[in-house]
Length: 92
Image (cartoon, rainbow, N blue to C red; front, side, top):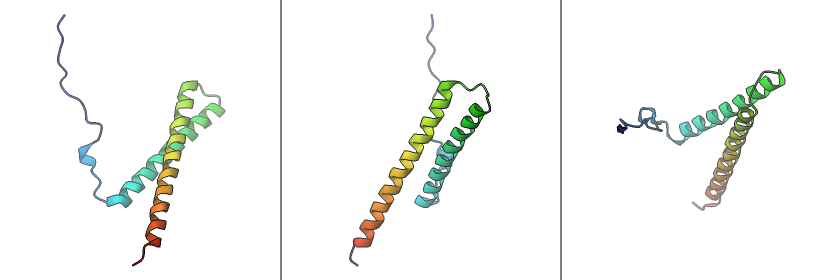
């Protein structure tokens, strides 16, 4: 039995999609990603309520993805608020 070598791996992060807009553009992309996760979970919930055949594990997985994305957004918001408060306390 011959073992064939792997030809290569596809990159996880696309180098062509570098973000030149700075941190605000990155935050905007992050917000859009969280929104997409929430909408995807909402669409699965609607499909279940309509009686469509949605596997239970798919529903739970999408709900958890949306939950984790929202929790991450809340933590990022908290860190940004802490940074703003720290800057406002600085003496110029």
